Image 1 (tube, rainbow, N blue to C red):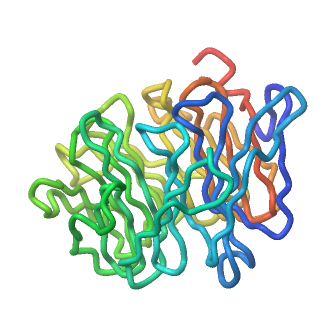
Image 2: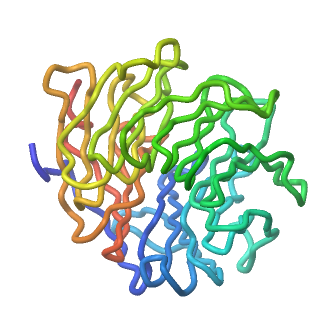
Length: 323
């Protein structure tokens, strides 16, 4: 099944802004944040876009500019108005959508581009992890102006840092050093090192239904699943993308469904438990597709953004049909 969509695709064109990341609000149905950059993130400024859906499509609720490209965005898990972005100047920014200007706070410690930022999902802790091209992950309490600690060990650029949705104080990181690493905040050290690909790993995500399962997406065009109880071999491998995989997300509603987007301009949907795992290929961008998220409120809704200056929200056919 290729490019068929159930229902209308809602599109917002953002001239001069190239999308890097899209994240649905965990609180407000239909609200979406997008981190974007001028000039493909190589030079120029960045913009945080806050979008709302209505009957006629997507509308821009608010936008905030920063003086360098914005590469990732994460919503607060305890305040529906608050987000954190990260940028090419090595800083993180804390924004409040209830205020017309910002940021409220800037955290500047990384010495190179910050490519990934994620707000912890487990109750009882409000922590943000940031991953940088300076080869470190930093841990932040947004109410404190400086980082709580720094995690070292990766031997190249860090592209992705994602909190476990199950295990408090545990997060994963993916790097250009071809490893997936699992870290424990309490010990400030690495728990597991997985030599997951023989290529740079641009993305990773945790399964929402199995605390031991993660997926990695790499420049070798493959997605691989990893069971942390035995990381000698992947538990699945998904092939089909023709260029580097930029982002991968597990479904919040289906235990074995995930989505990936790529520099091949496509978004692909997979069910790794099936003999023929590729469910659908969506081809509606004309440039690198970098941002991807699956709605926490609607089991069928997906958002993505690309370097073609568009942000899209849609319902892929494979998610609207019974599994």
